[in-house]
Every structure is written in structure tokens, then in C-alpha cells.
Image (cartoon, rainbow, N blue to C red; front, side, top):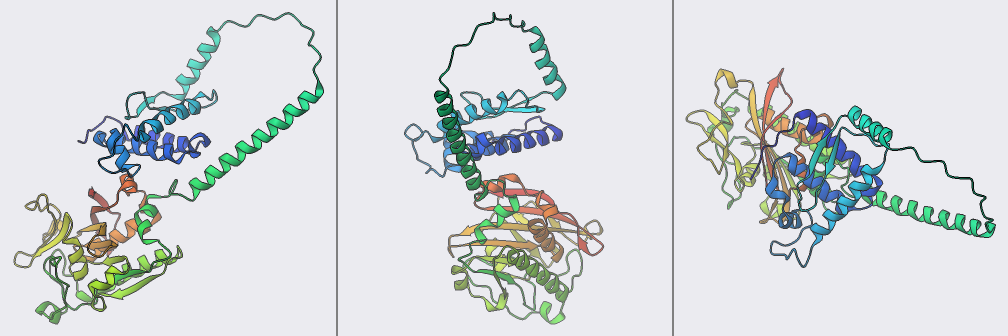
Length: 420
């Protein structure tokens, strides 16, 4: 169940900023469990996914428990929620702290509450409380007793040791948080399964001399065969008459862009043309498959998923099909004037049980869609558009729309996200 909750964009931004401040507070940074759960609760509540903030679901999605686990025997969610309440209370107890919104987790619920209050009214409330409190009466002067100075010295050393231990504890927690996914950008989380330094990576790009009309079945290996499309040297005309050399050129640029992104992070990627690869090689290494109808490997991988690419040469249409609603063709290119500068694309990441490896597919109905998909995952200026719920997703697909401006893909628009 998804519930639309009435927060303005400005309020959502304030909530996100407050969450960031809370999670960077040393009281929270010292507990990765609290950080993970509070972030999950706030993000899913803002998205209206209240079914996702129930105890059993939290145990499964956040802490990796099995679906049949006993929450009474393993109360990890309840214990962590109690700890979060304590830490939030300490966080807001600081009299100098000012914020336009406070995040609360009331007892008996896992749905966070967001209490909005202007900084000015909060300051006035504090001033009124201070003015209403009676001034303390002056106490009579009392001659202080004599104190053993050796006790004072021992107390000072004890406080110094305790302070040092506390500093080491907080520093160690912050160090652990730094080397975990805490604070990492969403783009890093999206690519994380492919960044294992012990495993090579394949970046697959098409070198074929034809363009397919529809998806390849998952049971057979794609095979390049000659056709009239290949002999004419042009692709299937839907939307714009892209020449096949231009498609191959743009897809190759995307492949080099992806390879360069990995190289900048110390990860080597093997750039391989479609015709060189066999299915058995995908059982040995994860793969990033570039392109759509001109790359049969992309079509084969997508044929297993909810969203896939389809085309009809007879009527001159290409579209992204939703397996749950196959008659819907809102995401299509058909050659009409209003769609002459529009392209659509799919970003798909999933664990392929058949190969036992991770797969990422960047595929557009045309080459500009593929370019937009790559830009979204590699350009820092566009990474902020990635949905936050992808951080906790194992597999996902994103449907994109892009307007072509001056022969280049513009900023992509996310139309749909499916995560499982």
C-alpha cells in the first residue's frame, strides 16, 4: 500500500536536511543499526510506503532476517527503535540546537512524525519559558569545608581517562561508518555490486550489422545473422532514421564512458564486442550490457524482467513494454512529429540466477536513450535524480524519458521505478 502524505517539497527538503544532521550526530554515528533503521523509516514514510515500516518487513528488509523469523524471539527491530528514541531525545536536549523540523519516533509505532516549527517561534518559546520561571533565591554564604587535594588530583586523572576512552570510542565508530555505505552517494550504491576488486567486469557493446525487431527469448543465445537492415546500413526507422554506424558510435562512446567511470575508481573493465561473447562467459564475471535493439545480449537479459524492449517493423513503432500491463504503450517512439526529439530508455540491475552474476543493462529505444541512462549513473550533476529507495533495493529497473537537444541527450526524466 502506498499512501500519499501531504508534505510540500520545501518540507520534504527540510526533513531530509534534518535527517542528515541527526545521522551525523556522534550519538547516532556510533550505532550503525540505528543509522540504518532511522534512514529507512524516514525515507519510506516520505514515499508513503507505510506497509514497509512494519516490524516483520523491517526485520527482513533492513536486517536481512528470513521471512519466517520470529520477531518475539529476535526483537532486533523493537530494541533498535527504543535505542533510536533515546538517542533522538539526547539529540534534541541540547538547548542551543535549533531546527525548523523535529523527527520523532513515538512509542508503539515505527512511522516517524515530523513536527514543524519555525526557528523564531522556538526561540520565543524558550524565552517565554525562561521568563516564567521564578528567579532562584540567594543562598546564605556558607564557609566551604576543607577538601583533601589528593582526592581532587585523582578525580582529574579519572575524568581525563574517561574522556580519552569516549573520544576513542566515537572516533572508531565514525571510522567504521566512513568505511561502510553510510554517507555514500546513491550512485555508488547502484554500482556497488560491480566494484569488487577481486572480480573482473565485462562491458558489452554491439558490433553487429543489423538491428533486432524484438526481444530474444531467455533460453537461447543471441546470434548475429545477415538481413536487409544490415545490408542497407541503416536501422529500423522509428522516431528518427538513425544510421547504424551512428548508433554503434554513440553506444561505443557510452561503453568508454562506463569503463572510464570504473577506471577512476580503481576497477578495470574489459570492453568486449557482442559477437565475441558466449553465455558461459557471463557465468564467470558480472556484465554491463550497452545498447538496445542492436545488442541481442541486452534484449535477452531484459526478456527476463518486468520492463523490456519491443518493436513492430510493420507499424514503425518501438516501445518499452510493462509485463504487468502489456497493452499499455505510453513509452514509445513511432515517428510522429511530436516524438521526433524524444527517446526512452531502461536502466536494469539484477542478480541473474541463471549465470550467478550481477547484470546491468543500459538500453534505449534509440541511442540517445542509452546515452541518457549512462549519464544518469555517472554524472555527479545528475546522480541526485536517482531515487533514494534504490539504496536498499537488490534488483531494480528505471524507465527514463529524455528530450534530444542539439544532437545530445538532455537531462533525463524518471517515469517509473520497479524494485524487488
